[in-house]
Image 1 (cartoon, rainbow, N blue to C red):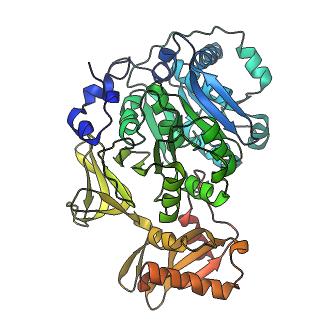
Image 2: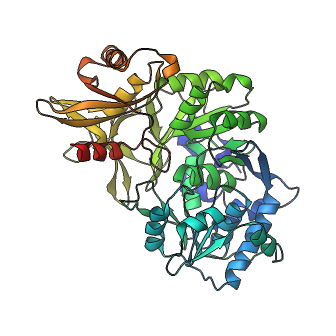
Image 3: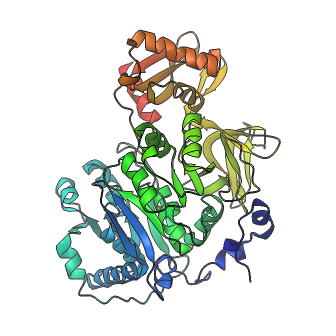
Length: 517
């Protein structure tokens, strides 16, 4: 009997998709299911296969097999039970991708505990805010972070060093898994600043079935792929789409760990023989800017991006470098992937710059100010018998493709014109001296708001003084975009503020401008 993984075309996706078909890809059912079993234990049979490949920031690499991952996660589950952890207790994990991280992630869920991945670059305030919110029994981290975090009320800090792993090695390497499908499995925090607590999204074990939809049509995962996602598994893209979704389908995956170097990422894609790559738009831009792509040969056949719209220069570079189309995958942590470009579907005609079309089983529309479907408005998804907002603006064309119009709070209204920050940034990035750009609206007594651009430039690529370069950038936007959208203010900066997930933090720029005013 055919499975959903047997079909690769867009037409077959529309014809054969069903909720029952998704559930048929897993061992569990609507009553009993466990993410760790679906992603790890059921694949640890027969000859050992690679589960996860790691590229480290120091240039080294490593591989973890399904057998090893099953054994170490079982040992960690036994260790938790021995410490009195019971189902429903939270276990926070603040480690870079590594054997201890994956052992703890899957081991916690095996034991019925709730895994809480935390980004390793959080400072003490960021950690405390999240710990105070989810009240974990344990925080597993490294020695450096344990020293900076300090004592946490009602949370024991455990250092996952060599001695800790040696102690785990003495514990049984099998654990009997038994959880309800609707039991809590994971808390995941969206990106945000330490002054504004991000929302904790709570996932049950059955979420692994839901995310399979994104794997099939957003990243195009199929058995036999060698998948890679450089995003941190502390965030939605790296965790659900880069780790759990491919492993849940028995597909080898890989990631980057440590200080990011785009040249090392390119080397890993080549040496690992990666055939399916899913990365943030920022990753493609950084790989392009590194100038290191020509040193290697690649086997990539499917390629996707998410996080923010990719600029046209980076899109063209990626397709020329890897020899396949770069597909959009759009969604939010709260609702999952809702729009996609169907990587691997030869009958799907992509439209560069669009967000793609709805994934099977999902209804998406752009709603106007009156809450009714319209050609342009806020992108919303139908769930639980109501429209759920994404906080992104967009439009739909006559053929059903969706187009991004910027974040609802990133829209600039100047002299009656509605201007999307992403469009202006895309135009600025076409200038050879521009490495990064961010655009916001600032108060203007005449226009209400005017466009201000913060620009990081490569001084070796242009010798003009600041005034001349600013004028040249304004001309780029005037000529490539439109006259009314050009940035009337250009400020050159050494770096742009980023969210922990690596996205440009326009909100921080707006707050900075407000404080200075």
